Each structure stands twice: as C-alpha cells, then as structure tokens.
Length: 120
Image 1 (cartoon, rainbow, N blue to C red):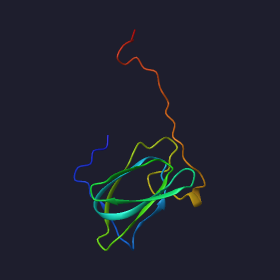
Image 2 (tube, rainbow, N blue to C red):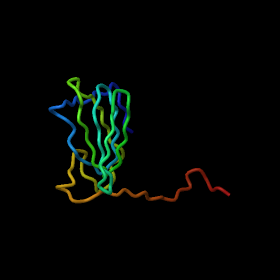
Image 3 (cartoon, rainbow, N blue to C red):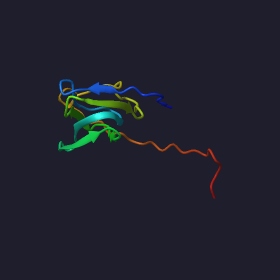
C-alpha cells in the first residue's frame, strides 16, 4: 500500500518540460506549485490541452499519452505517482508510442470468494 509522507515534487521548467509519453498503468499528478499547459492524446489520437496549477490533481489513464509545458519562469512542481502495475507491464517510466507501437488495455478479473460467508 503506497503511503506518501512529505512527497517531494519534480520541478519542470520551460527548458525541461514533461515530454509526451505513456504508461502501462494509471498515473496521478499532484500539482504542488506553478502552472503549465497540460495535454493528453486519447486512444483515438485526439489531443486536448488544458491548464494545470498548484492544488490540481490529474489522473491519467493507462495508455493515454500525456505531458505538459510550464508556462512561465516559475516552472511547475509535480508529484507523480502510479496506480497498480498490471502483470506484463513495463517497469514504471516514460514510454513512447512511436517506439513501442502498442496501446495497453487493462482488464479486471473477478475471482469468486466466500470471504464473508454465503449471502442468501
């Protein structure tokens, strides 16, 4: 169970933005300072842009390309954390559609259980 105490963000600048990438898992960004123009490229290839700023939280679904460009000299402080890493996934990191040539698709397996007794 991840527990983040005193999370330390990564500082991004106009010269060092978050490049377009994807993951095999969901990722959540906590914006801890500054502002940036964020973008996502959905599974159909449609790009959308929006502003993120201190106090925002953005959950990016697995397989959605995403990144951001800080918009001023202050830069943007982001604490990213990943969701569950499905079996068969890459290690957490940045991956690129142009190189990987696939879209990850997550599936839920429902395993029967009688943990709390039979329900009539």
